[in-house]
Image (cartoon, rainbow, N blue to C red):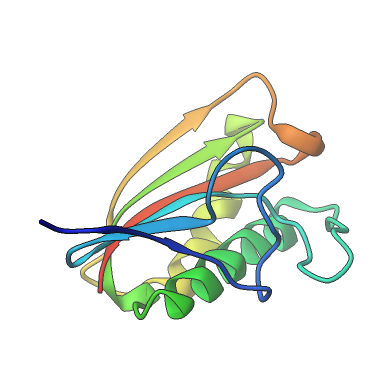
Length: 126
């Protein structure tokens, strides 16, 4: 029987609700949606490019804590407060991921926690 193991790192912001930063089971890592918060002081940058980088850096820190990496990401889901930010997010996203890119879904949502412009979650191999 495979065990579910929580993942926690102080290199990414702690969960703001009743959920784990990530869970692992077998060879997979399931990372909760990452807001663009600074892990130390929970501040958030203003612009969408900076917020995208912050969310992806948080994702990266959690993956590494779980024994994975951005190179092992299989699927991401990107939530945007404004779909007009899609092109700017793609530009930043392409700097973090290389071909073959992870499978991805991207949705515009009405709003995100703490007024964020973006939230990104992922599933990765270990």
